Image (cartoon, rainbow, N blue to C red; front, side, top):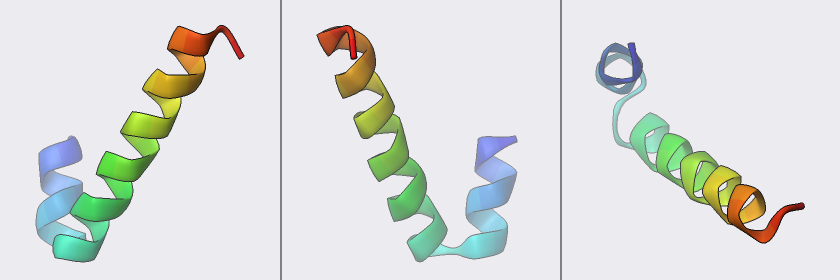
Length: 32
């Protein structure tokens, strides 16, 4: 699903998805 979204939105979508994933992991690991 994420791959298909990336294909549709292009590089900007990929970057935004990566940023969101990193932020989610950061907050999850920090317990926030």
